Every structure is written in C-alpha cells, then in structure tokens.
Image 1: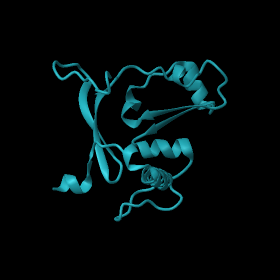
Image 2: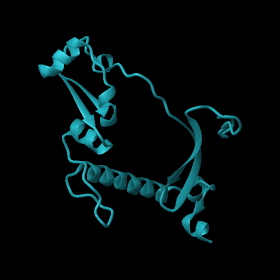
Image 3: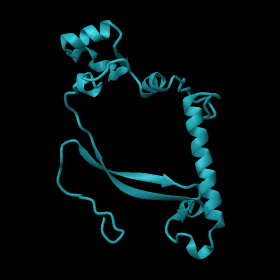
Length: 159
C-alpha cells in the first residue's frame, strides 16, 4: 500500500494464488477492496499440531474426512488415540468442526434466512447485527464534514 493506494499485481501467474475483490457492505454504502487469495497445501504433522510432545490430557485434531485414508500416524500416537489421550475428529463440514470445538449446534438457516435461537450461527448473526447497528449509530452522529465522500449509496448504485 502506498499513498492510500492498494497495489496488486495483475500480470503473470502464480500457482495457488488469484486476485479477488472483497465487497464490504455498510448498509447504505458498499466498497470493493482488492485482495490476494492464496491456497496452501502440504503434509500436516498431526503429532506436532496436537502438541503431542507435551502433556496429552487435552489433545485433539480436526481433519477433513476426505483425508482419513491418507493419514499416517506413529505407533505411539495410535496408542494415545486408543487410550483416549489424543482425539482425532474427521469432519466433513466447517459446521461439524465448529460443533466439536464449541459444543454448540451451528444451526441451519430457515426459509427466511434466520437461524434457530441458541445456535452458534444465530449468535454470530446477532453479534454482526449488533455491530452493524453500532456502526450505523456512530456514523449518524458524525458531522457531515467527517463522513467519507467516497462510495456510492445503494440508491445511487441502482440508477
């Protein structure tokens, strides 16, 4: 970034990397921000990731279900799993992983787009709504001279 200008490479090619545009929507205004999106793959050392070298009373690893067949573990790790000292949870979805990590049901959106009360996604939705209201209240209290002059209102984008 230089002089409030975001510089992003637009020529050439890099494996595992693409340019993207993140749209940030503040209700009446939406802005685009260029972003570099990268993907990394590799071998995961489950023993290291779980901190197997230390005390093992609370060790656990989430692993994509699709990777279970390729998983290789040392014999001492296999023994620790068998003894319930280390846990490996294969998950198919992010929601499955979130349920394991938080102990809360993620919840599925209903036809109106809202989540059931008490679910993790509902709590996240409620918090995002609260933050949006706080931002809106904050912006409403600003003097006109302090409000950003960039961006277009939704009404202007529809024209």
